[in-house]
Image (cartoon, rainbow, N blue to C red; front, top):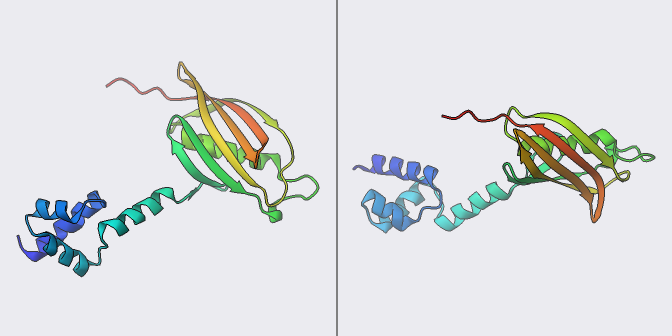
Length: 179
């Protein structure tokens, strides 16, 4: 194979698996490890250690969760975690963060956890106390029961060690049709 084809296959292999080693690439493309290193250098592709850091940073980087914080961790269908930093600009200093903001964080996290097409049927919420400016709110959603196409999900929002919101949601989950 010529230089251009080999480099195209190298790029494709790294797109498919960015953590593949130079030795594995050399075996796969039937060339020496030194040839792979030279090709990587010419293409501006970092070594496997640097690529591993890039992958880790992408996976661990929190992503926005609508306007209700950022998603920190998720195990689809099991549990999820998000964070919201309250800003003084959005707060009424007499009453704190509006209750609908806590509900929005809980609902946004819930939507990440359930399959698309799910509908919230029932929600029971408790607001424990007002949220003050500058507090960091951490929400945790956990599926606590599954029965007949309905999931019961508990969402708690804490500020430091104190719970500020608790909600129990009953969600109708679409049932997958047998193949």
